[in-house]
Length: 320
Image (tube, rainbow, N blue to C red; front, top):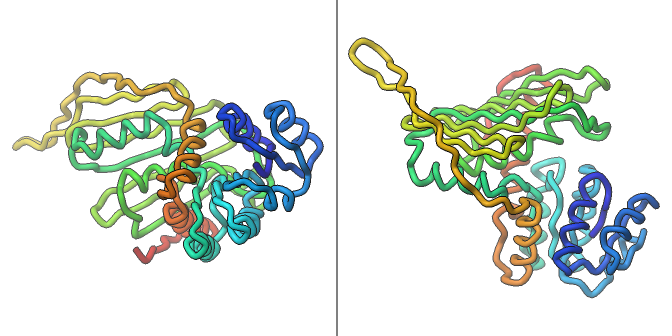
């Protein structure tokens, strides 16, 4: 494990409880102390090279986003399977380079899009693919709270990767157009609030609203279909399927309002499931759900959204 800070400590805890963590590395005394407390059976070090030289098959990287490319590249070159927290890198070009490097060395490359392992999201995907919602019309996602405000990346790159990953999984394709707008209020040139609109070639639209300047916490994903509608509230831990839609009749559109039925799902910790997926990939040599290629797809959307954001909401077309 490389990095045991704000998010990394959760990975340290999970891999330690899975009884497979050999070493934990952090450059700060506080990070090493946290790792030592959470993983008493692991060797604690400040030297990344000692981790890469260790006789272990896999490395997990949870460090600042700007370090991901160099660290993943180094780990792959030393023959390690790699699980890196999102984003995979800061540009599509870097992401593609890492995917090719992993393929050249025959290594597993996995990206930490933890929401894709959430049992409720897995169940929602089953409902969509099973046709229970009918034809998808549009999707929206809100990921809002007060803090944690970062200095090294904006809200788009900090919060939106989760929602982009899930929407791409639900749609099974990239959008052909991305539009993003937002505002920087706390720190110059670091957006605190963004709204990103995605347009797919089948006419489906999706929008992602993210903010760390918000009076309450909201993490909600809504999918509107021609037959039914679904809502996943990750704060309330509820997935609800609404039996309601709109019928177009001779005298105009008529809303058909039905009841909402709560859909049960497993309460397993998504991060634990994600960690187990990495261990399974190492053992089976089969690519995990959130492999390097899916990480690159997310990067394409984020990079397009960042370009649009800088251009004050000008549409950016993706080559899909």
